Length: 111
Length: 113
Figure: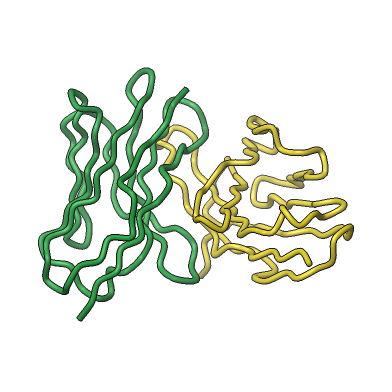
């Protein structure tokens, strides 16, 4: 079946540090890939997405590139802020209706 | 305006009780979902409805019964609540065919004592 594996957290960084959160997937066919973010006490918000190989999703300084050859969709940001502290979820969707989520990675940014 | 709303936001109840959580979306989407997030933040789909028809039921106990009176609403009724049902329940919606980008509600934190 389809699955998503994310790096375990928590990830603790200082403000303005470079962020990478690794995400790899297993899927049949060509899934769409997503990063969702969950701020404390809130629901999930779509951060970015990519629907086909080599697509790059970007939003709020975050980027991720759909790499079919390595089945990866790593999230990056050049300079994190305290306000980026949240839980980040990588997810995939095949032609079906459901999202399959990774376990989530807690990001803590210190000032 | 809130796109996907859930009520209540918090629900504290005793074991054995029956409770309901309501969800409404005003995005005009045709598909709605219920997810369960456990204490370790792991998210798993429970149900999905498309145009009021059940299309996903992920081996959820029979005590959980979703109901979709129309495309804009998907409610979750839980009978005989157990301690293990304590979690945050998220409703979501999407429009079929748009890469399944889902929009989530704020969540309902259920605590069973």
